[in-house]
Image 1 (spheres, rainbow, N blue to C red):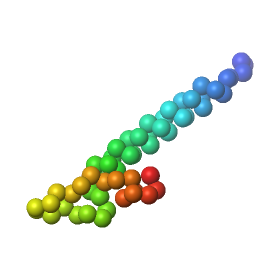
Image 2 (image 1 turned 45 degrees about the vertical axis):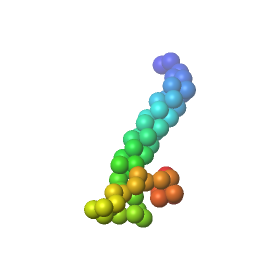
Image 3 (image 1 turned 60 degrees about the horizontal axis):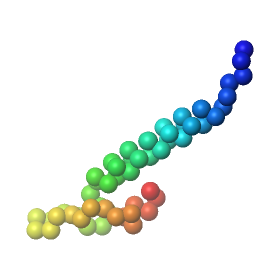
Length: 55
């Protein structure tokens, strides 16, 4: 039984985690912002990082 090198698994986990986090951030960016709801004459501004302090 050969010894497996753990480095590729760390790389795979890191890539998958960053991919999921990026997809989650993109999904958050398409949601309406928390503090300015859209009105008929004023469309909602895109959310800023300050609207989502936990991201």
